[in-house]
Image 1 (tube, protein in one colour):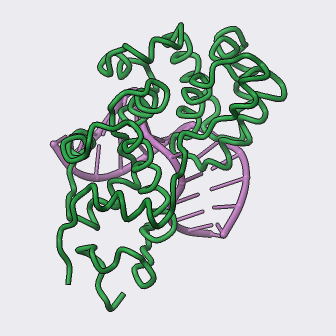
Image 2 (cartoon, rainbow, N blue to C red; image 1 turned 180 degrees about the horizontal axis):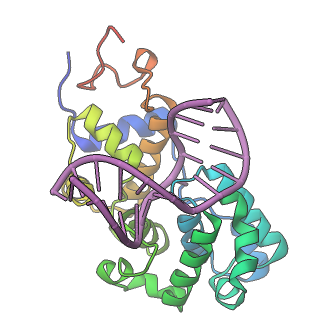
Length: 220
DNA sequence: CCCCAGGGACATT
DNA sequence: AATGTCCATGGG
């Protein structure tokens, strides 16, 4: 039998299951050695990961670190063609080189992430709702919940909530404590769970949440 | 061969 | 407002 678990208890359950994910991943040692700002890696990787596997993003980040500098100033001062070649493994490389240029110019200095309005961030070409919220939450330490494809899929299956981006974002922000750590980890935990069980072709049979999910039938 | 991956801009209906 | 198409590499 299924019932509606509170959003916070879903978070607790996922946290118990998978542990802290420590998103957004950054190479702290690199930035300590080079003297660059770790927040700039978050901004760059947020653009690179658009509809792209993290594995491919990592290859691009390694290229930038090896042949350039993982910073927004490097993006600003480098030839766009050079950036294209470095980030090629991340896919959509011509498009993303352009987007990196735009955001690097806009977020100058990067400390702007602390006070920039979401509305203004969304005006930057290549920065949509999810990328904006990733930048605001993970680089700016600001209370913006990140909704992605996984989150939409999970919420539709688990709660039967469909909704557009803004309504889902609002749902999370209304039903969770105003806690940056919870926002960061919950988003990561949903992604982890969606990769393991709540896939496009869901594996409900072994899903740890099957008893509290409204769409998981015991017959699955 | 297929489908999918930590989306977004732009056009069409 | 909802849906379709394009962008592109790499892995399963």
